[in-house]
Image 1 (cartoon, rainbow, N blue to C red):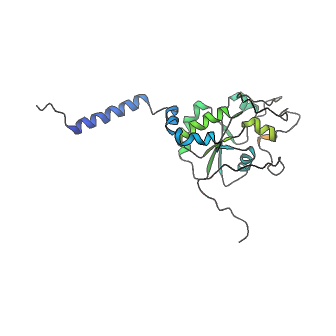
Image 2 (image 1 turned 30 degrees about the vertical axis):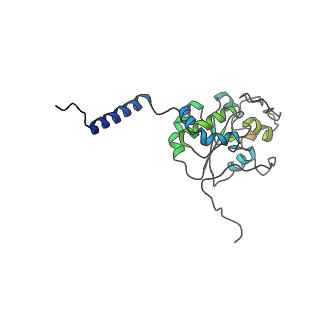
Image 3 (image 1 turned 90 degrees about the horizontal axis):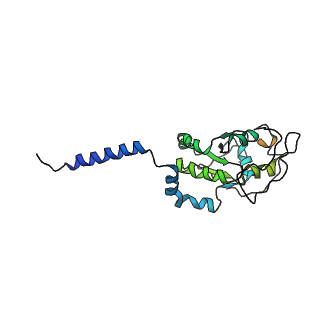
Length: 216
């Protein structure tokens, strides 16, 4: 009997062993994937190309041409106190459940990740990039910055008090007298009467949209 293995049989065996190993240990974790992608994407964080002004997010919330997805990655307590209209609470450890959805996004889709400041949202941005490389951004200054601008003094909350953004620590720095969720006026301000701000637009759609209206 010939003791030399057929190269084809040996190759098939190695492929089978690789497949079994992958099945046992799973796909590379998100941290490993991020390390692989970091040389391409890290500069977008350091140059702050993916941090968008609250006014730009507010504009997108009122733009029917954009398929906006807002991921709020905070804990349930802070979410119950205050969150943006149409936001979805997706904690960090649940982000992998969004892989299929993110990969199926259209060229008009934009993902914006929010947390109390930028700490948690930045980590989440890395993970969604590792998951599917979507067209994703981070709310600049987080919801603390949002409430600094759009917080409304009323009988329900004290969110008008400006929060310091100089030392981010992941906490919601605006005290509320009760948990209002998305029922607070700042959850979706009226773009036409909200404080007007100048900002540099960061969001780039993967597909240009020709909007109706205007002169020929």
